[in-house]
Image (cartoon, rainbow, N blue to C red; front, side, top):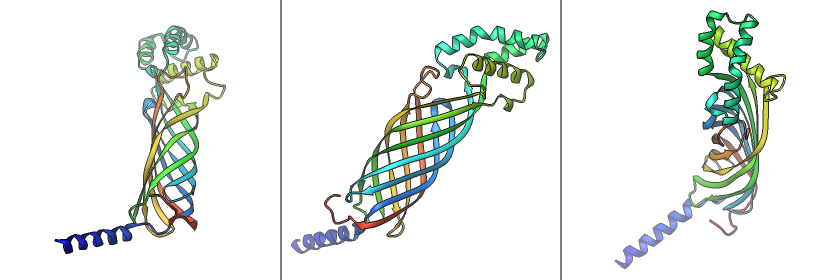
Amino acid sequence: MRRLLLCTVVLLCSLAAVAQQDYVGRFDAYGGWGYLNSTNENLVQHGFHTQEGVNLNKWLSFGFDFSKLAGSTSLVANQMSTKYQDQLTAAMPSIIAGLVQAGEITPAQVPAALQAASTLYVPYNASTYTITGGPQLSYRGLKWITFFVHPSVGAYHEEVTARPGKITDPVRLAVTSGVVSAFQSAGVLDSNAKKSDTTYFYGIGGGIELNVTKHVHIRMTSDWVKTPLFDGFLKDTVNNVRFSVGPTFTFGKNVANKKGF
């Protein structure tokens, strides 16, 4: 029994020694494909995500994070705050009357215009930038894989451009274009039918790295964050899920022998 226990302890120690990561470079550089899903807006964006970090030891690092993404979707009325929903409802009869007067729709098309107004959606393109920096905690107890977690707090910038021309139905197109013009007159959109906002976001992120070689890893990372984007115009705080995958290059002085996980 004693020999069995001794052999077991020796085997476990040997496996632990084999499993340890014997090289952790001082610096990390990552770049890859990024995916961002803003669930409240029903907006999916794709783009580029990069991270650069400095490893202080095996388990603690500090870094910088940047992403640029783009996509398109449609704004529907119930995504707006009650204030703007009420203003739009009050303005809709005037918008439709103006379309008739301008000859963009006929009196016979008014019922169809009212139906389009009741199910209004405004197509738009979006571009989003995020930037953050802070600490990251890593577990490197296994040779071929690293687990990590980090807070996600930073700046969030989004620019949207209304694109009513994507609508093919002529009556709905006329109504939506009229709404966009009303938004421009009210200062909600600028003269180019654009609206932008820069604010903050907060949440948590993490992921794994597959250690393909000593200096090249494959990183898969995900973040869940909330942001008060277009506060006052949108009804709800925007929830975002970001996923990214790509190669990480690690280099510099080996910090694996410093105390830590």
